[in-house]
Length: 199
Image 1: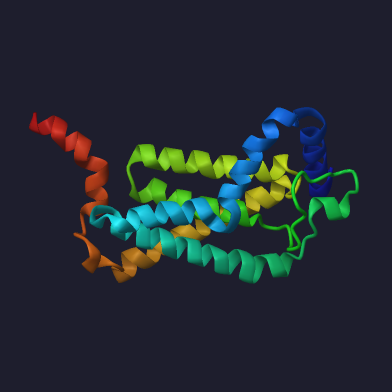
Image 2: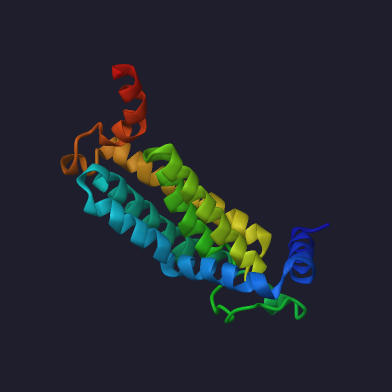
């Protein structure tokens, strides 16, 4: 079975078996949160407001910017993959039909670029919530019929690369060191442990 056939089979299964009227608002809201990286930009602004998390916010912003350049500027145009509904008439999208190319998923790529960065730099609970939200936003694109599963996987990998590049740049160039103490990021992860030792 080819990759395209597998992608098509998964989408058809979701469409014929998993879709329900009551679930549509949930998945549509998740996709709306991912539009233009809305959720992650708002999350980033909250990080930038506080001095303690400001450096995390700037690194996350770089990851999102790198991802945007990779996804929308390079990979989508090179792959030039049509959307599922453009290739298969029986795949019916539940939202407006996007006009850009399908691979990789921009929603998934941006979400995972931000989430992987938060997983690496922030507290573990925040990282878990970020990865959960990224996964749900990515899955919403399948449920709504506007991406193939391999588009989502491609978005996840692109987001990971973008996050890794931002983290590498920060480590090598000491970006934003002047914005907060160098141990601020580590402190947010070890605070609870050190409190226990002090007691």
